Each structure stands twice: as C-alpha cells, then as structure tokens.
Length: 439
Ligand code: GDP
Ligand code: GDP
Image 1 (cartoon, rainbow, N blue to C red):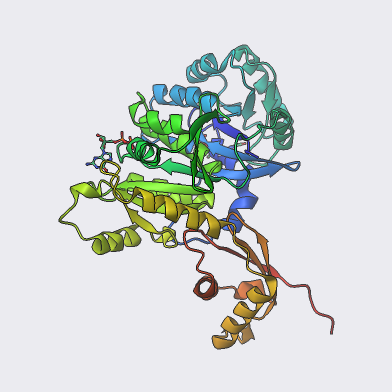
Image 2: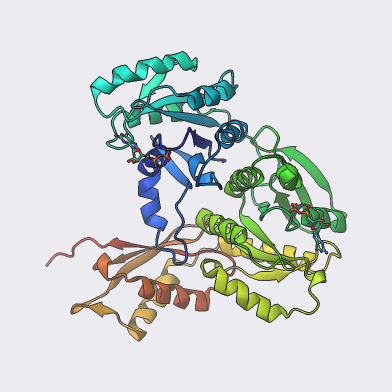
C-alpha cells in the first residue's frame, strides 16, 4: 500500500521544519546512525493514530537557501499541490497575514485536495485570537498551533489523517513484482535508460496509472519476472520542466522511491560524481530501498578504468557501500541486461529473512570471536530476531544498549554479511534492552 504524502508549505521562518521534526522525530532517532549523512532531513515516514504517511518539509527543498525568491515559494506550493495528497499550509500568528501568504493562498485556493491552514506560533490561548485574521485567506477552517511546544498539533494531525482518501489503489500487477525507480539529477540519462530497458527487451509492456494524477507505471515481463518501472512519466519529463527543475525532480523522485523496492541511482560517468548525485544517493539510502549505482554514458569513457571509477564513487558515497556499481550505456545498450539481472538479485536480498537460529548463531560467534566491553561491562546478546524486511531489519536484545557502540554494530553487520551477503540492500540493526533477568 502506498503511503499518503503530506507536504508542508509556507514562507520561510514560519516554523515548517519545527513542525516536521516534531511529527517525524521519533522515527528519525531509530534510523539515524548512518555515517556520512549530515544533511537535514526533509522527508521522512511518520505515523499518527496507526496511519502511516510520508511527510515532506518543502522549505528544506529550497535550493537557493540564501535568499529564497517569492516565486520559488509559490512554485513550491504549486508543485506540492500536484504531488502531495494533503497540503499543510503554514502561516505565522506573530507576523499576521503577509503578502506572500496571500500569494500562496491564491495558488492553493480551489484545490481539489485537502489544504489545511495552520497558524503556527500560537503558543498560548491568547494567540489563538491572532489566528482569526487568517480566515481572510479563504481556505476554510484555521488551525492555531504551536510547533515549538506542541500545543494543538495533535488536532491538526487528526485532521490530516482523517483527510486521507480511504480508497485503496488496486495495483495492476502481481504482488511479487519488483518495483524499480530510476532516479538521478537531470541529464544523467534516466529517460534514455528507461527507453533502453523497454526497447531492448521487446517485452510485453503496459502502462498503468500510479497514485498521483499523472504518474504512469510501466509493467514489463522478463522471463518469469515481472518488473514495474515506477512513474515513467516522471522520468521522461524530469529534465524538461521549467522553473525549479531540481526541486521538482527531487520531489517526484522521492515520491517514486517511496513506492519502489529498488532504486537505480543513475550518475553520469562523463561528468563524474557531483554534489547533486550525492544528495540523490542520500535520499535513496534514507528511504531504505535496495540500491544500485548505475554509472551511465560509459561509452564516452573509454580511457577511464572501471575499478578506479568505482573507488572514487565508494569514497564519495560511503553510505551506499552495500550497493553494487553497474556500468552501462543507455545509448548503446551496453550493460543494460546485466543491470536488470542485478536488480532482481538485490530485490531478493531486500526481502530475505535469516532463520532465527542461524541469526543467533552468527551473532553469538561474532561476539565470542571479538567480545566488546566498556568501563568494565561486557556486551551480551540475549536474543536476536528478524523483525522486518524491505529493508531487512534485525532487532537485537542486549544486556545494555549503551554498549552498542557504532563501530561494533558495524562489525556485527559485517559478520552477518559474510554469510548472507545481502548485496544491494541496507541492513538495519536495532538494539533493544533485554528485560532484566531475575536474580
Ligand atoms: P521554517 O523556515 O518555516 O522551516 O521555520 P523553522 O522551523 O526553521 O522556524 C523558524 C523560527 O521560528 C525558529 O526560530 C523556531 O524556533 C521558531 N518557531 C517555530 N515554531 C514556533 C512556535 O510554535 N512558536 C514560537 N514561538 N516559535 C516557533
Ligand atoms: P535525464 O534528464 O536523466 O532523463 O537524461 P536524458 O535521458 O534526457 O539524457 C540526457 C542526455 O544524455 C541526452 O542528450 C542523451 O542522449 C544523453 N545520453 C543518455 N545516455 C547516454 C549514454 O549512455 N551515452 C551517451 N553518450 N549519451 C547519453
């Protein structure tokens, strides 16, 4: 099931990221311990009243952070409206209605999806009065909240999850289909790669609508395998949109990735790795998808050496060290068939469970071979279990979670990967306190 996408829009400094962090905070703490990622998060899964959703802080998507242009903010509102299922429009009780608020409201008014007008910084009941003037924006009910101290935030979240459409989208493909999203910055060759995949296979290809209004998924059959390419319309148009291209591309890619099993992170071999590529790679890592780093345009790089290029990539995106690097040319078709084979392999890793007894044996052997202690206290593993897949998630009950030092967790992960390589998928190890044993 797709998770609904909730976008927070509004001019700078109204408190968007404060609300975002408050809502998704708990989830972030669980998956935080990844080296090499220091960016602010602007996209995260969240949950309220048992309903899961994905939240986006559109303020963080501003690429021109110094002096965000008015037009860029309204463009964000427009794109959020196109892509999100619910829009939270945030304003500020202290500053009152500003011209920029009016401009954003113009974009949002009359939308055919829920727009929730939140007036932030209503830290106490007196400030609720200040919020009343926002009725003038013509967006219906006004919700005064304080993102800072949490006041009335729960009420807004109630409204958000109630407004999710209850209609569940029937996927038009088998449940075991492998869903792939092709992501990357503009011009790396995403749509060329898509065409190469579709053209070469002479497969049975069909287009079916995805969740967003203009998203199209393409289904293809490859032997016994069904592959779904997520949001092929987005891939085709990504490089050709006017205005804030990068913003649009990122939002669209995040959306596609949320629905995918495997992300093809495409980079341009000729250009080499750029900051934009690292950003995209970071999103893929964060989303917990299986990943393949696809080095495209290799036909232009006869003088380069694959091994050296790979080493460069590893150095620059260390947090995707589990991802295979595959060299292709979308133009000549080189490597494209092998890429799809690799995609099937990493998708299998993404859903693989280790039997509980095996898992406990591996961890016990690891800890026996290299015990870990700090301040005279030794880490002991009581029990481990596979709690989830996509990505594979292992919960380890230990005598003292403060002893689960990052480097040691890394060691344990590597020991697991020695026996179950889990190629192409992140592996999550979560440490929990075992219940105190009776004396
Ligand atoms: P963004 O640019 O919209 O993401 O805004 P931020 O979340 O960065 O917040 C801008 C400033 O407003 C920060 O100094 C916050 O501490 C402050 N702020 C955010 N929410 C509230 C609130 O509910 N009450 C008050 N008094 N200040 C807030
Ligand atoms: P997108 O914006 O990521 O979808 O990129 P496109 O697929 O539109 O490709 C951008 C440009 O790179 C186009 O001019 C393509 O013809 C070119 N291109 C894409 N793949 C390759 C490749 O494998 N080799 C070469 N030489 N050019 C390529």
